[in-house]
Length: 225
Length: 129
Image 1 (cartoon, helix red, strand yellow):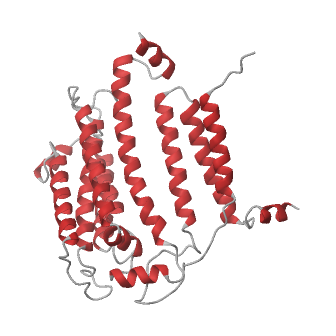
Image 2: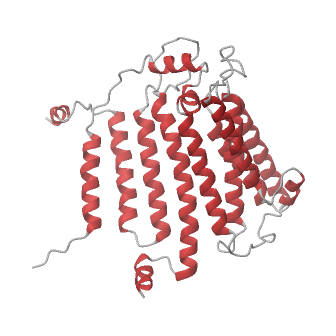
């Protein structure tokens, strides 16, 4: 008699065992009192999450941003093989919808600016601001007169600006690694924390434009409609 | 009896955090079930994203402490707040998960254009020919 062996069921059984082990690991509250305060005092900015990913783990963040950039390049390469589909007819043309979408885009963009500029003083930061910025640009590209965006930004290749802002992030990271860091400044002021505010704004531009380029690639592709 | 058993298993009290951890681990298991046993490629991708969400939420839960954000009000104050290290670590996973999702969707689009199906068994049969 031959026992039917399915490797997928074996994987699932092993995963159940691992999850059961993870469920009974005790939870510790050690180190919670002084860990955050120590990190904040050393970095010079109140938001400790931003302090970790832009100061303690800047090397990690630099290559994370590179992974994002390369994956967007790959996705756009595969999307551009086919002819582009111009979907002027399927976009929203209703004036009420256009006004509401423009208002939502403005609110989203303003929240992105706020999250990026005070991201080192309050909860927020570059990545959250980038997602908000990308959302506002995608909302703008869903309405029918989206071509008026080309007065301000190049609609054709937003990934070009994205790559250049990644080069700026790389340059600032290399300056930091070679020891050229501005002083921390006054605790809680807008320009405190060395390169952190500038890096926040650059990461916002990079992530937002990358998201927008990817969404434009998917929106203009023939496969979806 | 049940409580003593739980204490024996590692001193985990039966509270909200433990129940939320069980919930998030079951979310990860549901995602893994979808990745392994679903036949449609789009469903596989959605299940992978569910798994990613469960893992991210598990990290955020592990850093949770009395719902206080890790933002220090004054310099040198030692008020207990959430642990900032797991949140900063999992930020990388969010961005990389988004990148992997975008690449997977594009690759599945190419596959479906070539094979005219999304079913994994049919794709496997046509691949062999």
